[in-house]
Image (cartoon, rainbow, N blue to C red; front, side):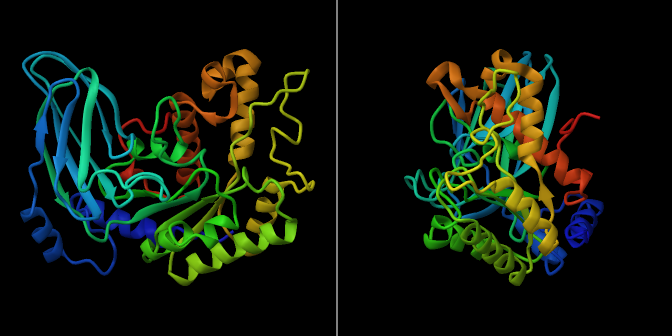
Length: 362
């Protein structure tokens, strides 16, 4: 398989070598970066636990530079917009300062594309056991490379706890220099995302040269014929390539549906639809035929759920709260985000230099 992400790696590597410049596309210039830095915004922040910060900015991509810590010990997490995790809870000792940077995609609607608009601008929430904010600034980052997500409710920015999609947890593992634009939406299948202008068409408009577009659609293709499913995915792949982006097929996360022998070897768990179409198998086949990178998240999540077993695996899903074996908890979504990121890294589709410290365990 060709290394579709080579150009993205080159632009990210070059940008990082220049000193973490947020504008990393080949057509961006140093002057634009300097001008963006000069327009740094100090958000208005209120409260103590959580600390809520708002920047009155237009839709686009923005680098966030935060320094945590203070005279007292603290423990701080950072989320943005609709519950997107930017930084897992991070401890600081008394007198210690920790600086973290990340890039946020600001858009309307701010969460699911068919959901409520949310508040304008950029909202950041500093929570955790004892939030300690020293300083925070927001810098325009036009042209930042993106990971664009097209998917369903297991991927999307879920608006309410305890739900979480894996795309919602992905940003915490990335540094400034690459943004996650999550256009996944609850209840969508391969046909509906094409038909709705707010979904795949809107996501496609955001794609620039060498952006990654991760496509995970299967859970709601319950009655989609094989030829229609393949045609829909092919349309998305070709459309992304026409825009100069890199499509990546992602097979769906498994349903937590055990056999009596403790395995998930059944059609319900492995997303064989009502017409007998093995949807993950079709994605694997199409990946080989069209030379598209593939993340086999079905296989990876199957391995993880079977490893934990029927009881321990409940915490990955919303079984205890909702008797839900399809949608993930924050813990499950977080684990599955690391599986996706691990594959992106293994296939050299993202560079280690844009990974947050400790993003992937060795």
